[in-house]
Length: 222
Image 1: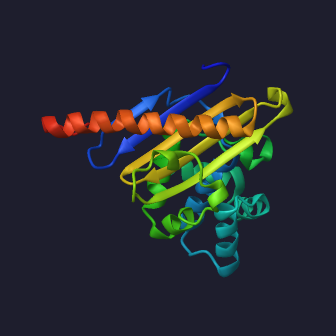
Image 2: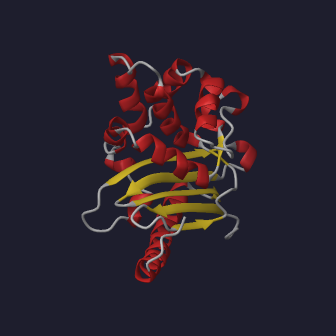
Image 3: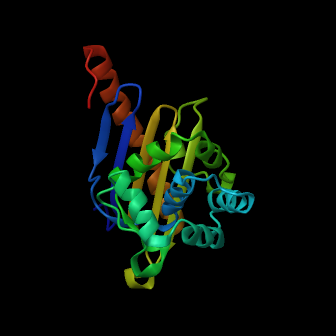
């Protein structure tokens, strides 16, 4: 904890395979991060999304539309459908839809990286995550180097049960790096956004140092 804030990081550099992690197995409520899972499950079905579903998927990712997420959550089978999808990806730290609400899905930073890499294997999903509105494009984007493409989805929520403190998360691909930063306990959403950005930048710096060391030695981490 840092001043009452919990946080976790998982990141992998796909050039070298080198990983940087900080408490990657701690569970958090996903908030809107689970919308990436919904896209993945939708695209993994035997038939491609129809026009209406594709429109909903774009709204769900680009503007974080909750009504669109709820409609697609039902279309992919709710918590049981997502559970089967997550099991196939070996998301061992993820439990979908606590109390019947997709935003209360429990997950970990390590699972978020595994999930995003699987989803981005489909170029269709990559196009969606490239179209997030500028005002929602904070988070792991802070770790991008000049000219690097950024794909991301963020999540945020506050609950009375947590003293109205904020959970703020970000997951994405910045250049060759897939990264997830998850956190809660923030006094305000703005505090959480600033914290996630700082954490993402520090994680990228550490991962870059590790990756340079392994590249120089001729080893690739697994």
